[in-house]
Length: 301
Image 1 (cartoon, rainbow, N blue to C red):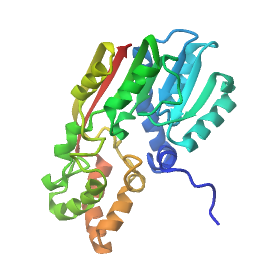
Image 2: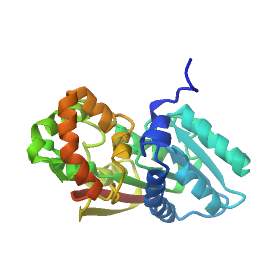
Image 3: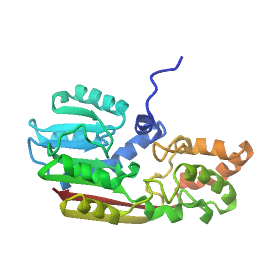
Image 4: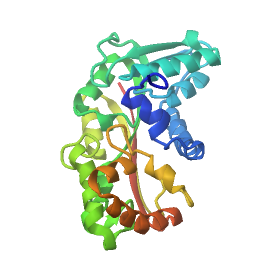
């Protein structure tokens, strides 16, 4: 017998593995994401009483924020490939007393055929295209469901920016110098690269120029894109003093294992001890380098 229902990998990641089950780490994550949500919604130029489609709604970060801005006459459609996350958001909507203003649709970002053409005022999405191989088709679907004059507002990480530094072959792992245990780091990283090859994985095979091209080719006009890249002292995703145990149980995205799982697969017990002895103090002091990039895009049909 299991201790409870088994969630799909998307729900399991958002609700548990993204923050390693650590409430403080979850708070740090949500503090980081709140301004992202606000900017996506600001770029969407919402007006009262509109219908907004949030594609890849996940745990409802943007969708619930939109409900507040749209007013009592507004309507939000939560779209996601995870039925478990749709059920989670439906439960939250019920608790918040806004269920009558919400709709829940099981669909992938590149196939919104369940929705009628020209039926939506605004489409939003955050960190969803990174999981979609056919990004051009996704933009075409966004364009199809929007009414004439409808708006699109998205946020996407541009992971291609840091793929060179990401390579453990350079002696860098999680932004830290692991040269003394480089051979171990290469083997751990190989677990991730087998799952997400740098040249072909949807999370890594595009940049901001592709987003511009896809939006224009899909028929959008008035396209705007703001790109931001940062190289920092200290990894922005690893807070000072972050618990090593939390990091071990954290997964960077729904498709990959946690650090603990990857080490157990790639290394012997003795090698894990040596790798940990070098990396753990560096991580807990956050002495490494952070590299990140993202883009906001908004456009009009």
